[in-house]
Amino acid sequence: MYLESHGIAADLPPGWEGSIEVERDPDAVSLAELGGVLRPVTHLGTFPLPRDRGDFGSGAVDVMGGEDAFIALVEYDPAEASSELFASRGLPRSLDPRAFSSQALQRQRGRQAGWQGFFNEGGRAFCLYVVLGDLDDLHLLARKVEQVLAGIRVEVER
Image 1 (cartoon, rainbow, N blue to C red):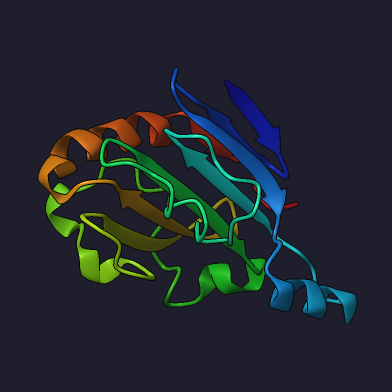
Image 2 (image 1 turned 180 degrees about the vertical axis):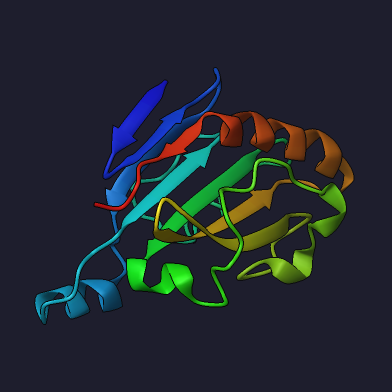
C-alpha cells in the first residue's frame, strides 16, 4: 500500500494499513476556526485502524493485539522545527527495543510498550509515537516498525 498526502509519503509492506489526514483533535479544530492551521497526522498499523481515533492513537491502540504495532507521525507548526524540543534531525529509522516502556504510553494497556521522539525534517517539526503490542516481542516488533520507517518520505516545507 502506498499513501501520499500533505507532503508525506509512506510505502507500506504487506499487512500494514494507514492514513494521512489533518488533525481531528477537537482543540486543534477549534484553534483552526480562529485562524490556526491544521497539520497532518499519519497513522500506520498492522491491524484494521478504527475510524474514530485520536492523533496519538487513542481508540486504535485499544483494539491492537500482542503481535501488532502502531505508528503516529504528528506534525507541529514549522516554526517549532528550530526549537530545542525538535532539535534532532531526520525521521528516526532505527529503534532501540530497550527504549520502549509501558511508562511511555498515554494510557498503560496490557503488555503494550511505547516510545516517542521529536525531530525536524525538511523544515518541519514532528513527533513520532510508536506502540508495540507485547513487551516480550519488542525486538521483533521494533524491526517491523523500522521496515515501515524506511519507506516514509517527508517533503521540504514550502
